[in-house]
Amino acid sequence: MRLEQLSLLIEVAKYNSISLAAEHAFITQPAVSSSISKLEDEIGTVLFKRTTQGAYPTEIGEMVIEKARLILDTVEEIKQLANSSSLTGSLSVGIIPSMGDKIIPNVLYHLKNKHPKVNINLTVGESISILQNIQSGKNDLGIVLLTKEIQGKDICREELFSDEFLIYAGKDSPLSAKESVSLKEALEYPFVAYNDEFAKNNGGITSILKQYGEPNVVFRFCNFELIKRVVSQGIAISFFPKFMSTNDIYLQSGEIIPIPISDVSLGITVGLIRSNRYAVSQVEKEFIEVLKSMCEISTPISK
Image 1 (cartoon, helix red, strand yellow):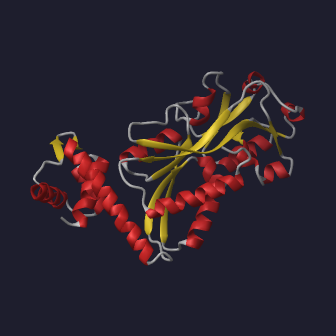
Image 2: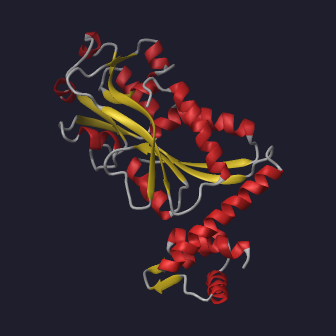
Image 3: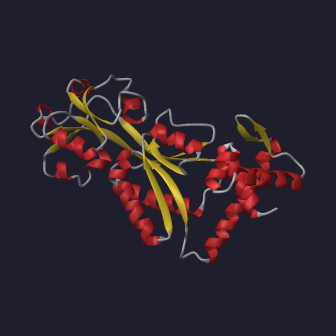
């Protein structure tokens, strides 16, 4: 029994697929299949049920896979103890767009300063897309809005911080003179949406707002800078989470006015998701530690 076999065992379980495990391990499919078969012969039991839909762990296989995860996690810890100053490895993280605008750049800065040999691959998407990437193994971690859609049998959810949506209106908008505005009134104004918000349910503001109605969407952009520029010109309003208002040049200059919603609380919870089908690596642990620290510093409402 070799560590490489245990690693491939976990990869097959992660993707429920020998071919996908081979692809991510950069070896051939027959090599993975042979490795698993030799391990099964060695311990005298079948670990996976092979079907046309994929490879699924047997009852004994589930227990062996869990032990394999513990073994590899311990090996990783031993490596880090031997050379704790040079953590290495890669991490794929899916994030919602608002996190990329403020918090994540600070996370990357501090993490790379502390561990320069760690490689982080970021993908930006909506919450439901990130959930699907976690389930398929494309992302190791996901930072999402924790709406009711964001869950699954093998998904761990952890709250990072709570926040709320505000109305962003241009300084010349009729709303800008108000201390607060009702949601009903806000929904009557021309609205600029991010990407395909309110066209399909990607989680996030679409999921939160659907019980109250839909805004009058007149523009859609995939760029926050463009959205804020349009808002500042008084053409339309938009919703933004409160934590994004910190040190925003449009708000500091008075070009955009953030306005609380008076009659409805559009509260949100930003959270971390990952699959519980494999152990948390040391790189993931370091990323999560820095992430939580930056969330505490950067967010106006605590957990």
